[in-house]
Length: 253
Length: 261
Image (cartoon, rainbow over all chains, first blue to last red; front, side):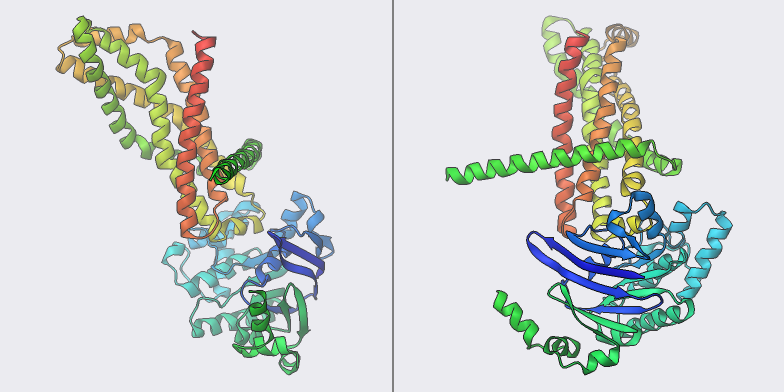
């Protein structure tokens, strides 16, 4: 479904992604873990065509994202829903207009049909009757749910989650994890979740991949990842303050 | 010392060239998307309200003060020559040809250009621009085109309004302070104003409107960092718009001087 081959990306001579390769199968939920700033969000932005690679290839359903013209890229994007870290809800629009944005802008649906689809998407994220509220009136957890409803409203085949549990309390974080899992079981879509929250990773992942120094250094099911004896993976998943990751950082300073 | 000075100047020149290049690309995209469907009238009307109707109070206030100040300043000189009646023509020509268009543009740049940058800038830092793109919506078509059309259309209208209010300011001083007859003031005003004065004044405001919209949007799209970045971009947008409006005014004044002397 999604194939990333030898992807490299640098910002001001700092190599963020370094010859990275990854495959995500249809219907799979792949969680990409790694430290903050290691390039997880950059990777997601390449998949949806928001960034162009310096070298390498990103392919979604056989379409090379980098070589698509605007029209084809637009149609691929309408098959991908993205849930941004802070929600990225449009401030000037109501919750209803936000959730129905993709439908209103690109599909010539009757306003009544749009309202039905918006209600249905909000039901899926367990929010009802908030269509008329503005994003500024929502809590952090609600913003994330509305952002997910906005992604679901276009009925995507792929959903990309950028740090879905960052910045919310543990109870809300757990309810978001349950929601991601139950939506996947219900809709069967392909998902990529980027996170550094291991509790979230274990709960939602079919497979986990760890991104470190621009490359995927380990991949496997949650059980396999926990049993790996790689010191880098071990330090990260156990949240240890000292180990090879912090040693490498200290050496670079 | 000199090395640092040259580096500072060179760096600023390079940044300005980079800015002009980016602005030129945004202008090309803005004009291109202005003619591409779907045309969303509602968004343009919304921006017209923000740029036009909402600017009326401040434009009225500044315009009437300018009319009053101009009349009082010229009155001092004209009274010495015993030619108070010419105050009306000086106020009318100055306001319609120069002060009305430029001051209205500067007010709109300070008020609406800054707001455009702050709005688009905060959308950039909160990933709303990325979110627009993931829905296959071009940010230039969605955000720049309504602001461009609204600013280009509303600035001449605001200027026309400001011209009228400025002349009323002069009228108040001349009629109620200097005891020039009301009919005489109006007759001199209309006699001294030519249609070309009005048209040249209004024509340049079309370009001032474009400058305000493009510079405001460009700075908004190029915000780096968080709230501090938005603040800096807003300041940059106002300063650059002011400089470009004055430079454009100088260019058009010279152009009209040679074409319609």
